[in-house]
Length: 266
Image (cartoon, rainbow, N blue to C red):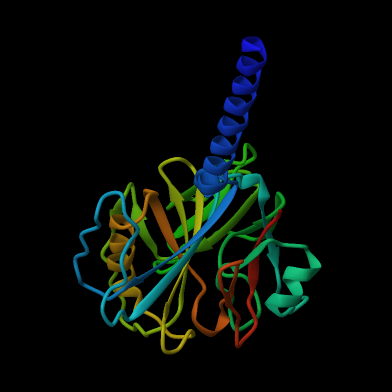
């Protein structure tokens, strides 16, 4: 009889342990890293935020801009497409290529050509050029390592010339422009761990508007203070009415044609 009671007690102990562990995994499952993740952040320019350790960021009174992002840890999932010939709406491009996320790429000219270097799947569609505004390159090399550089890459898998560069070696840069307007901003960044972060910054009252380009480094600095990832380098991509940012979290679509787009595969 004593042996039977011991067996029953052992079985009950195993069942209780299983239930406790299952409940823990269910509650904490979102804490395990995934290949991609998203987030959002609200900010008012030129305000110093002090995050509370161990807690989520609390909303700021009357925030002007909202920042959303998607982090790609497996850079092999990033593809780049030119849209100058097909002229696809972003939603159609998302469906055509079965993208999990779609984010607009670099600038194009009034002559419907890419401005500066443009490389897709090792095929160069446009050559690099000297340009004081579009002074940087976002690219992924043949080893699927992502970079932002002021020098054109050699034999990249994908590459766009864009700008200006906003952050270099974890330091925000001062941007000086003769003309600067409020517009939605799309940014490509690389973290200290080699992850790629695509970021959209826009005005809550009008999603086509956003900060002036000279304000963006300050917004990125605030973002750094209140998120877990560390941006090493960042560069401005095409924004405003020519931009799109479609993820599971948000759908920001264009008014005018996007010249190119990054497709994040499942």
